[in-house]
Amino acid sequence: MKRITRRAALQLAAAAPVAAAMAWTPAEAEQAHHDAQQARTTAAKTGTVFKPKFFTAHEYATVGLLVDLIIPKDERSGSASDAGVPEFMDFMMTDQPQRQTAMRGGLALIDRLCESRYDKRFTALTDVQRRAILDEIAYTSNRDPGLRQHITFFNSFRDLTASGFWTTKMGIEDLQYQGNVFIDEWNGCPAPALEKLGVKY
Image 1: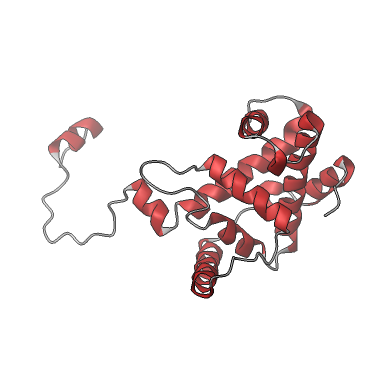
Image 2: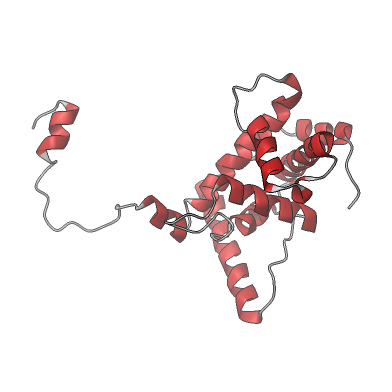
């Protein structure tokens, strides 16, 4: 894959408003999860590796590193890639040109920033260098006008990562979500909770 120029990356990123282009309905997200899980299951059964339909090999490797820096594996659950977030993102991009442009342009912007700082693309950086790049683009409080589009893209990408992770079985277990449980007897809200809220019934 040829390296993209900064001008081309900026044009790609500006072609579609990132926040709007990377927002999905719950139905679209559910379908993408279903498709991603089905693809992972098929790959596991056949002993093959998942092949993205939208991302290039380089983009897919970049996405895998980014999502795992956003949601790493810890003592409670696996990482975002363990939960299938890169596959989820690949299916989210299918057949949606505006979203594809925003994603491809944003990933290219990150590579251009890495090249300007370290003369390497994101996947070739050390872990320390990757974290330094993310420290520059992870905070909307960074007022550097040259990083405005990078920051906008990364914040949307982080939101998509979180949506992808916390709507999986692994993510729901990580949240320790207690809902959707049948209660056969309701004795009202506990007194300490009522007291804290300052209400009575």
